[in-house]
Image (cartoon, rainbow, N blue to C red; front, top):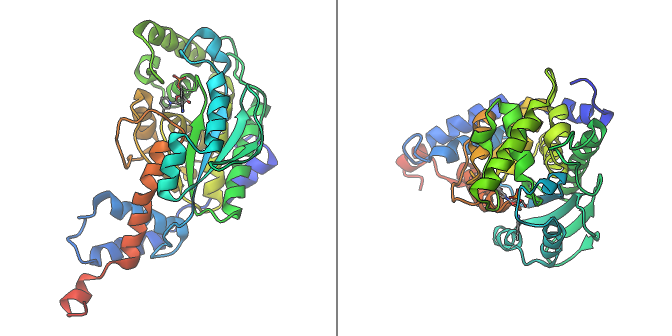
Length: 358
Ligand SMILES: O=C(O)c1ccc[n+]([C@@H]2O[C@H](COP(=O)([O-])O)[C@@H](O)[C@H]2O)c1
Ligand SMILES: Cc1cc2nc[nH]c2cc1C
């Protein structure tokens, strides 16, 4: 891809296709386990994907999941697209740090760490470690510009935010993480998510725009109109970074970079809801192979998420009508990812059982 930074192009260059031999070995191994072929359904394909990512069969069982919650604020709030004030974004970052948010509870249950990344939070934000999460600052600027009026950010800012996401992936993997989990926090961020999905899949705004945290019909019509006209501004021939800059958010850019960084490090990435889905479309536009490293943790209730997952060709592991974000649906799915690897590591073979082995 032209017009990218050195960090971005070297990250893209490090993303390898999955190891076909390890995938084939996993498929053969699955067929020989003590069960009817195919009877573990999606777990079988998931285990083969993990083998391809790890370049080994059986793949190691991921033992250290790490959630990256990317947070940012949005200029488009000025248009009244959500009933919540932007203050909630920094308030929730403090709740994450203290340990009382849904993502903290579910991460404790899954044995996952939580790192909150300030990509562009408008309110005060302190770096540091609390009982619930480590807070790190990669603030590009306090909130994007209003995407109803013009570009949300410059291309340089988009690249800076993508690089920040790559750096967070590197930091977590260097700290021992072997399963990256995406999370987000940003009042108003379902508007840029819908715009990214509309632009990157060629789908009409009214199909992909949803009610986010919960809005009435009048606000939904306003939000849909804003998404439609923002997408119309995107120039012919714009690349995924141009689209991100025009209608995205800083947390979307951070998550897209996190996906690219995880893929470059050979680590699986579990995607959360519609914000992650739209960010993964950006990553796909930059480096399509990065999506081979992704697992869709769940499908959120937001309508654009289904469209994004179709374009990504990812099947969600869970469908629980969640629409919270934070990484909640993704971290809930991590035991399923771990279970699929355990199957290949621990199950007896049909042959050994028939021979009276065990
Ligand atoms: O993950 C999802 O699919 C999802 C769907 C709807 C809302 N959210 C969360 O709600 C916030 C955005 O909602 P809104 O209505 O302010 O655009 C943001 O903090 C997201 O994490 C998240
Ligand atoms: C309270 C609250 C918590 C959230 N977590 C993610 N998005 C959110 C939006 C609100 C409004």
